[in-house]
Length: 147
Image 1 (spheres, rainbow, N blue to C red):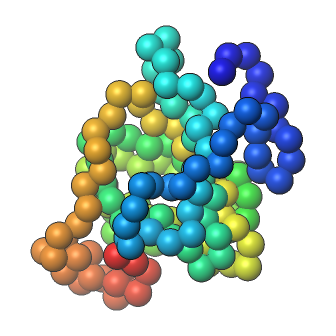
Image 2: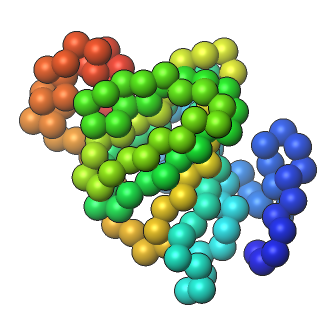
């Protein structure tokens, strides 16, 4: 894809397939992914659109790379580090390197967000039992996270 990627309505784009969030697993629920920019050596980043259905959640994970997220529709909550925050359309979320993060659609409509990440990036790291224990020391975080 080059040039304009046209929005066709219903949070879909011309020529862009709606994909599963990740290949398999039980560490996420009801999430789809659309890649709005082709992975190309000429691009420094990739632009993706994720949609979390009501009651769904992304994976609790961290990476070496930084994320820049712009909420595009709906509302919900996100965990960044040890802070749970409400998010709504046009809020920006910056996720530093090696920071635990997770998004949940806690309202009655989908939580849609755009995510910009480096084209070359590391694989997600999932929490182990010690990480879960450390995160769960804060009651608000413990109530929020899904694994």
